[in-house]
Image (tube, rainbow, N blue to C red; front, side, top):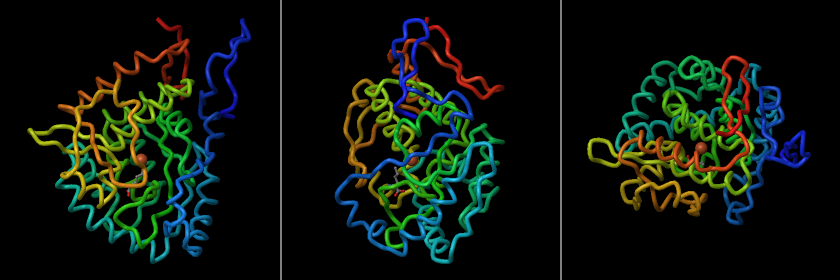
Length: 321
Ligand code: NLE
Ligand code: FE2
């Protein structure tokens, strides 16, 4: 589907790469990105055959989920529950030290509503929670998606979310997203109205974006919603999901380098995806990060504007002014 381009009816010239316009189109999303990094092959997540088999079992269930339908329940086994509890107990105390109040107050609220401490929460419950808080929705997915798929879905206020858990031998860090990363990292942020709106904004910008812009948006997503930092009472705190979901990142955060965030420069900055982040981009406040991204977004060239119609759940094109 993503090989298609949208053709201009009058001139018959390709205008932009295909993008999902409504929930029906979103049902075609769900290819999985091939992870090519060589060192991945040595990771227990790839080598442990029992683990792989279990991952495939869960993948089959997640893959069947379509947006708008109830998310299938997963019956987690004892080892998976133990992995969650072990990570959650340590993380809960680490995030207090490094994460921003915006994150922490939402985590506390969700924790009370959904009992994060005790067992792996079900995506169906999280979906209901987010819908009520910010109108964000969850699509269960079975692995890391292409940047285009992931970002395009955000444009519809849809968060593509894995259901499996990382390997029990690597609780403090995983290169892949897993249920710990999604729920402890992203969900408290998607429950925040400003973050939810900013995420959708980046998503809308990604719809129909040419490849170069798409990858720049993906990088900016990484440096903000995934690993962003901002000042709070004079101190630099994290607001990115990848910090909150990893004991290793939490420990590394105070020792890392910080650079003032500038989307026009950082959109092309490479970053590691297999190790803790060497450098975090910070702003004076979270609001500043939002404004910077909006300014950057306006500089992207598309032949039309796009807005999301909340009633019809559809992206509508307007003439670019
Ligand atoms: N490194 C993160 C963690 O261990 O939770 C996951 C990052 C996913 C982009
Ligand atoms: Fe993430």
